[in-house]
Length: 84
Image (cartoon, rainbow, N blue to C red; front, side, top):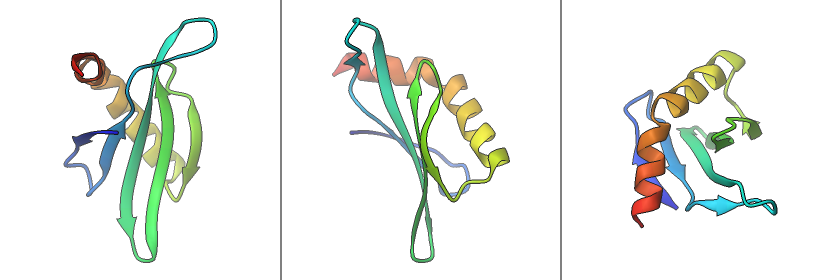
């Protein structure tokens, strides 16, 4: 996993290497984590689709904000993932 740290409410975003679907489409798994008492809130999604794969603890409004953040910064994530 690669790390891309955010300053948004102690939330960390990490992402995978570039992966390919069976039909050859590229995607990157992205994860958001926020430490809370007793564990973490998390959201798992993918680029470029931004479909939510799994989520726990984040409200719908927080989920929308995190996905918007991922969308705005997706070009950086793709560049960093391709550089490795």
